Length: 115
Image (tube, rainbow, N blue to C red; front, side, top):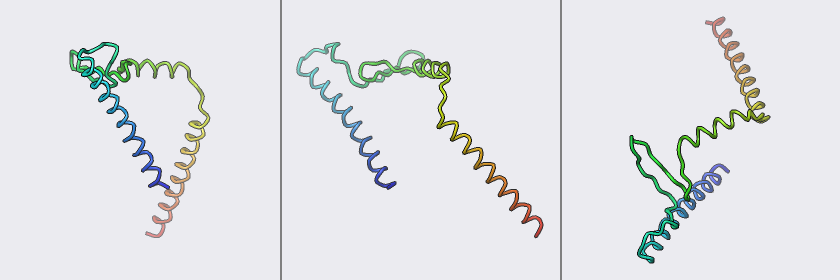
């Protein structure tokens, strides 16, 4: 099952980047066909280095920046949504950690008695 899942994820990853490369190739073909670069035909993916070593990237015409990510993270923190699965996961992790620490301390005590 793990191999199948890994293969499916790998195939999806390869096909996704194949589509992006195909879009880029089609864009270049349209520019060559017209002979002039039309601003309506933007590149699907573009990465440019701006001043002061900053990198500007755009994906399908939408500009991506770290400021967008920071704003989204701040918005998520403001929402303070309650996720029951993360709460259950944290509780389960603390329970398992406590049980394992108890077992290890018990084994340590037993070993120290016989040593």
